[in-house]
Length: 239
Image 1 (spheres, helix red, strand yellow):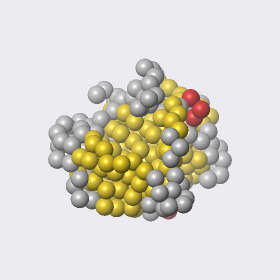
Image 2: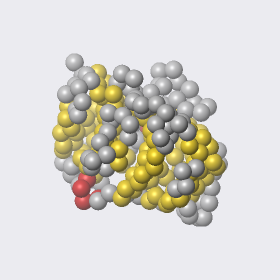
Image 3: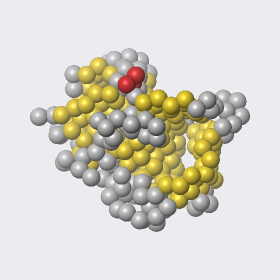
């Protein structure tokens, strides 16, 4: 029987540092909830807003797969591997921290805020050589369907990470639906609504609601509003 857990948007941990406003689906920094440490291999899902000209100074990571998805504005990135880049809405950025990296993230615009998701996934291999990649998506590929943006396979569509995980984005018109089949038996899916309303497995979901599903072979989703956008993150449940 399918198991599920619902995280409503207003139940997330909050952080307001003035220059940074963040909502934490899972325990992070000063927000700690023992019942919300992770969902399988999905460790962090932060919904961040950074004011113009501000950002995160250089800081370290290791043995984590880090995915950034800009939602509005431009995010400037620099790291100890020598990468300097600006990622925008429609881009997906990934880093395998592996043996260790340093990086910084700043709002590239001096006036307008940047909004982005920062996602951490536990890797299935430790101490790998650090790596960086980014891609730009074709928006038409997610209209009324699920577009793969991440997988374990470097030859597959989207970016790749050191984990048996698959991410998909969908942009739906009202009343449109899609079926999601689990890619690897035993995996679960965390669905995160970016905009609009969706119905999944009997749950009605609003913007920034999260729904975790596991012990299932697949599920159907249906958009309940126009311009409905959703992110699906399939990850191993046993880590």
